Every structure is written in C-alpha cells, then in structure tokens.
Length: 181
Image 1 (cartoon, rainbow, N blue to C red):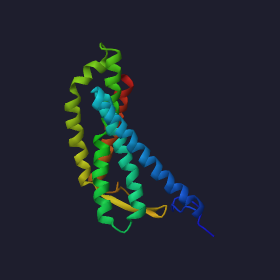
Image 2: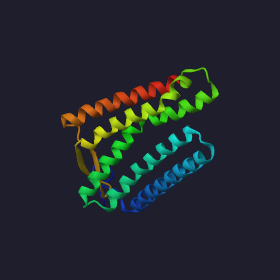
Image 3: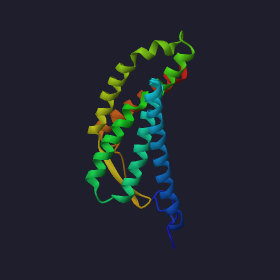
Image 4: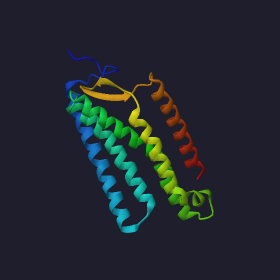
C-alpha cells in the first residue's frame, strides 16, 4: 500500500511517471519559449521580448531545479549552489515582467507613465541585480518531497527572513507598478 500524497510529498507509483513527464515537458516548453523570445528579439530589437525571454528562462531554470532534485538528491552541495544562483536570478528578475509590460504599453501610449519609466530600464536592472545578489547569502533548508530533494528558504534565519520580507515588498511594488502602467 502506498502512502497518500500530501505534505510528505509521496506520489503514487502510477502518478510518478506523469509527474516527472509533466516536469520535463514544462521545463522544455519554457526553455523553448525563452529561445523563441530571444530569437524574435534578435530580429526586431524589441526590449520587451528580451525581458520576456529572461522571465521565461528564469521560470524554466526554476522548473529544472525540481528535476535536479529528483535525480541528484544526494549531491546536496551542488543543489545548494544551484538553488542560491537560481533564487538570486528569480529575485532580480521580479521587475522584468513589469518592465516588459511597460515597454509594450509605452509603444501604445507614448504619453503615459510607462513611457517615463522605460528610459530607466538599465538602472532598474542594476538595482535588481544587486538585490538578487543578497540571496546568494541566504540560508536554505532541505525538504524531501515527491521522491526528490527540494531547497527552500530557511525563514527562521534572521538575515534570510529580512531579505525575504524585502522581496515581498519589492514584488508588491513591482505589481503595483505593473497595474499602474
């Protein structure tokens, strides 16, 4: 008798194949979407496509962390460094989605707030990179789920909980900006 799926992360053998196939398909599909955005950007020089490509690439890399956790669960040091780099990249990528929308809307409405934000995309990128780098020093903890190992932020650590709270604020500001543009 198999354990029911739940917080322990157990997956019934019949569903395990479907779970792994879904992870592989979404990872591959998102990397392909990223490549499509980069190729389209190379032909059109539309910054919004570049930003969207980076967002898709970051999402695919996050999906890849789940696959790596399934296959390399005993190589915890490797998984820890992948998690540090991946989470840092995800955190510095938060404003990319907002900026991609701002570029599109600025092209439609050159007199709006989006058109005033777009010229500062380099400064926003630099600030985002610096903020994302803070997560290289965050503390992670290992959890076993679905037959693999996942890393999650250890929010009991004071430094990690502070930067995670700052991330929430930064994400909230990005969403607010995205709504207003």
